[in-house]
Image (cartoon, rainbow, N blue to C red; front, side, top):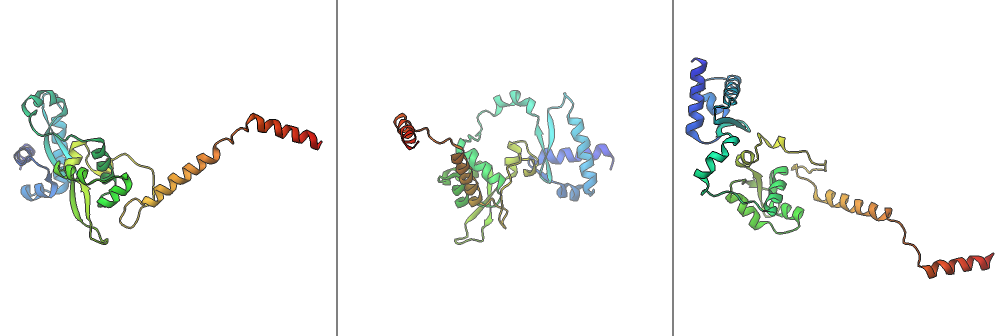
Length: 219
């Protein structure tokens, strides 16, 4: 199969699917190796960089999807302005960030970090398909664990969670979750240091005068 025909086949697959297509799916359909698929798509991505193209191929984890360029938004929103759009509140963004940095986290752990109930927020994020149920934790009651979805990556323009900004290093447990006690301990230590660095209060004028008088009497 010639290169142009391979490109056309991949374009047709991505366009008709309307979702992320895994590399192994393309390998099975086109009978090509992973390296060949990646090389061809990289070549196609360069083609789509031209100003006369309104689409692009984006990479999402171990797959690819055909999408419209961000620059085309002003021409598209009049057509799609009636569709449901995620309306993420501050609470939703906080919860989403916690889950993104802590895959396989439970509701109780999320609430321990935020300090408030997160039931409604988690439900809303599930409704928007930004997080998903990824199994049960090996804990009493077998609580549900949550992780972000590929839709989260696409919404924030990420290829994988590895592209998230780096956070301060905290101790993690065997489940690769941040140890909450360490964060609270660090916070308390910081507050203690701040308290120690505070200047001692100046004595009241009467106290200062009395101290001076007592010293003069001793002399």
